[in-house]
Structure formats: C-alpha cells, structure tokens
Image 1 (cartoon, rainbow, N blue to C red):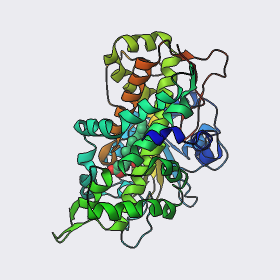
Image 2: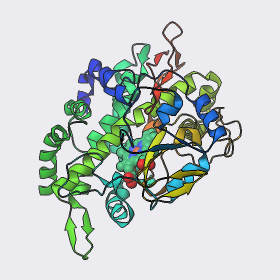
Image 3: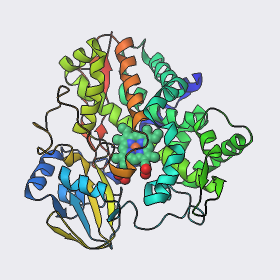
Image 4: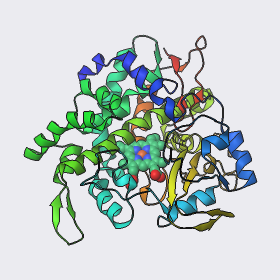
Length: 415
Ligand code: HEM
C-alpha cells in the first residue's frame, strides 16, 4: 500500500475530471444548475415524453443508463411518487431491455445482476450481499479504506495546500475496490482506464481469480470464488469464471465511478458553508446527517432508467411497451411534496431516505461501503488538517455534469 506515493497524478486528473474526455459522453461538459429546470418540469407534469438531458435543454446525444436507444420512445419521471412507483414495480419497469446471458453473452458491466430481474437477481445478489451489509463496513475500513485515506493525506499534509479532487477523493474509491480484489496499486488506474474494454480488465483479474480458487484469502474475489448458487433444478454450483468476471466488472465500475464524485461534492458543500463545517468538526455525530443530506441534495448520478414491459397508464401518461423510462432521482430528491425547502442544504432536517442510491430490489449494493469511505475520509481530513478552507486565490469549485455530477477541482489551504 505504501506504493500509493507512486500514483500518477496526471493520470488521475485525466480519468477523474468531470470536464475531461473520459467523462464527456455522460455530459461532463454541462456547466449549469439543472434543478430550476427540473422543478419547472415537475410542476408541469410528473412524467414527460423525452430523455432527461433533452428536457433539461441539452441538444447533443449523451450516453448513460437507458441511452442511447434511438429506436425506443423515451419518457422521464420527475416526481418522488412516480420514481417510487416505478422502483416498486419491477415487473412493469424492468432493469434491462433484454435478458442477461452470463454463459453465452459478453463479460460486460450491463451483462450482470444490474440487469437481472426477479428470482435470478435475488439469487445472484444474495451471493455478495453479506460482504456489503452495514456491519461489514469495518471489514472494508480496516482492510482498505483507513490506510488509503491516511497515506493520501501523508502525501500532502506538509504542503499546507492540496487539490482534494485529484489528491484525495479520486483515489479512495478506486483503491478501495481494486484493493478488495487484490489488484496491486500500480494496476488500479489501468483498471479504471480500461473499464470500457472489459477484456483488458479481465486480463488483470484472471490470474487473481485463478490464485484465489487455489487458495482463498480475506478479499472479495475469494468471496466470489467460494460462493455457491443453486440453479432452477436445485443443483448447487460454484460461479464460473465468466460469472465472476461479470460481477467484477460491475463492482469495479460502480465502486470506482461514483463515490469520488459524491465525496467531492460533500467536501465542497462543507467548505462553502464554514459554519456547517465547524459544527461537524466540533460534533462528529453531525457527519452522518451531513452525508445523507449531501446525497439528497446533490446525488452524483441523478438518473437511472427502467424499460417498460407492457403498455401502461402511468401518472397521466401512456407508456407503450418497449419505452425507456428515465427516473430523475435528482428531481425526486428535491420534490417539495416530500421535503420542505427542498433546495436548502440543511443537516438538521428530519432524516428520510432519498433516492441517491436508487430504490427497490436494485438499491445500491455498495451504499454502506460508499458511506464508510466518505465518513472515514472526512473524519481524517478534519482530524489532520486544522483550519481547512477553500483557497481564496484559486478558482472556486463548481458543480458540473449531467448524468454524472460532481465538483470541479477543490483547491484548499490548511494550517
Ligand atoms: C456515493 C456512491 C454511490 C452512489 C450514488 C451509487 C448509486 C447507485 C444507484 C442509484 C444504484 C441503482 C441503479 C438502478 O436503479 O438501476 C446503484 C446500484 C448498484 N451499486 Fe451503487 N452507488 C454508489 C457506490 C457504490 C459502490 C462503492 C459500490 C460497490 C462497491 C456500488 C455497487 C453497486 C451495485 C453492484 C449496484 C447494482 C445492484 C443491483 O443491481 O442489485 N455502488 N448504485
């Protein structure tokens, strides 16, 4: 782990800058605040025809969940009630346009439990769920998170300044998930860079899977190599290599692609509100509501999609079979029907679940890991960096991005 000092800063910047080429196709170049438009749309109707980005005013084609499917009609749900109803009815609102084929299909992020339904999804999810329950958070913290966080701070603590997006937030989730796979630090960024070319990722994890089959260790690949599933005929079997690769690709993409942005937004929100930052510094119990409120107020992935399996009347709109329904979780999280003063970031508001981690059967598997990463990271910053503040002479961070939202560079001073 001490090889953390050798992480290539320029490469991190390239892979983890929302405005860079790597994230351009999900709308990284979008600079506006989408929430006024989303409020207007929700006030007009709970569900609108069109994709979320078109309705928000972006003309160029973008890619994310449920995109692009040019031959299917698209609709977007903006209210809490409509998103909730779609998440609760997985039969009508399926996670995938076609069945998953783990045996004959390609190893790919989408050819995984993310796209499964019903019993098949429950069966596969149950295999990994035990490693992601709340009381397993300590396993993640002890094995990977705490050491990563402390070593990253060691790298800049004596400088009196840092850029927290690149120097800190970007590296923590990717090193946590690759660490849990047994991938060495010097290959962690290769994995991130290769996520759109699954064969390259598989090349890196193939020898690890083979080694853990021989001799299991205390890590996630060992959990997968030892997991047993029971098929429709009641026969128990171990996961095949292809099944493990699909699982791994999903976990690597979901684990390395989200939490860094949410963490950066959370830190920025606090730095922009020195009174809240001070309150959290003084009373660490406030960190939990501060994190939950950041998830509600600015979820990093404000949209997921569902596929309509039969004609249905839905919140006043006819959805034909085959349509794609975008759930605008960002708009649902600020629906005034559920939250008073929804545009205010207020850590004192009564805690209620938001949709930052989705809902229903596919609710984020890694949410307790993500929360643990953000909690440990911010606690360590507060413990080790006195007088942490935004650098008044640098460009202030802004929230950007359409389908992947987060902060631009976060230049800070301390000491
Ligand atoms: C702040 C960070 C994160 C956010 C905002 C987030 C958000 C989400 C959302 C919204 C979904 C539901 C997708 C849908 O409705 O189709 C989801 C699913 C998922 N997430 Fe996360 N996620 C985060 C971190 C993580 C981490 C750290 C991991 C793994 C270590 C992870 C693994 C997964 C997996 C495996 C699924 C699919 C679950 C299933 O299909 O049953 N996520 N996430």
